Figure 1: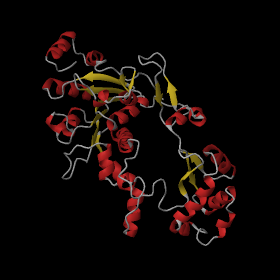
Figure 2 (figure 1 turned 180 degrees about the vertical axis):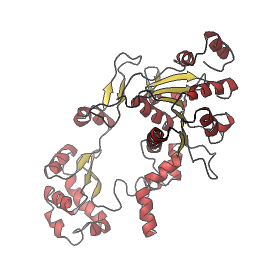
Figure 3 (figure 1 turned 90 degrees about the horizontal axis):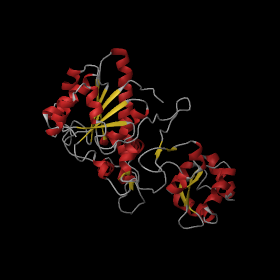
Figure 4 (figure 1 turned 135 degrees about the vertical axis):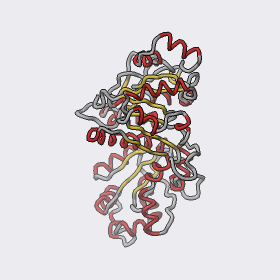
Length: 397
């Protein structure tokens, strides 16, 4: 999938959100030049265990289809290299703390003066306005600050983080959407623009439904574990084995009747406590108790099979080993094995969409630190002598 072939991205991001965004651009065919600190590089190069071979599995997951160029951005010579890269680039992405990009001569005004058609994308923690704009932030901090963590887990339990980096990954996706929108606009105007996104804005967007319910009712939502505030039964139920659970999502009256038929609980359909979703929400705990008396008589896969026969949406709560070997996941070819890479038995999780049955364009695999420094500088017509001079000053690696 090379729909962005010919697009060049200068990427000054690290950790998760920004690198995920630039990896998506690379997967779509763009040339991505990843600028890293000499010596250490992206922080995720040190995020281990686990390692895959001798490298951080986290870094490998977020940095395919990129060229690594090591530059000291605090040096005037390093900043000049970025300016040279941006002269002919299409997209510039950074995740620097608001204000520090200006001090490094990498602000929007400076780079748009160098290249008026440049799309400038800035990713921050708390945004580039307001009293907290200069504060650092990571996924769990924003899950807490945006209210996500107040909704996660069971009532009475300690706070629980959503198990995946949902804010980081979604911020990368929202940034991508903004960048693609800006590219479309540039096709019409030939002018660049600034795309701004933050972890906090993503976090607030994730609580859209719960925040809307609060604004409508004035009531704070409660932790419901796997359940939903507005629909019942729509949650996890125990099965015969204590460590195996199944999600049942009977989201309307028809599906509730199907569930009752499948579990031989037909009397519940006309029970005044459960006849409609509204009363089921009010009596959720009693209904859960009754249903769970039945589900605990089944092995989890048997329960899923029986409910499928009655067209009731149901899924086992799979561990990742089951996901990895799952027939449906593999039919979709979401996990792609890669041959001839320095990491033995390397695999990638592919893009979650296809265009004409084609997924990511994997043209290069995660780079070693500074692996393409000379290649990139040579493309800017830097001489060998100039490169050696910059190396001696520790501007590049």
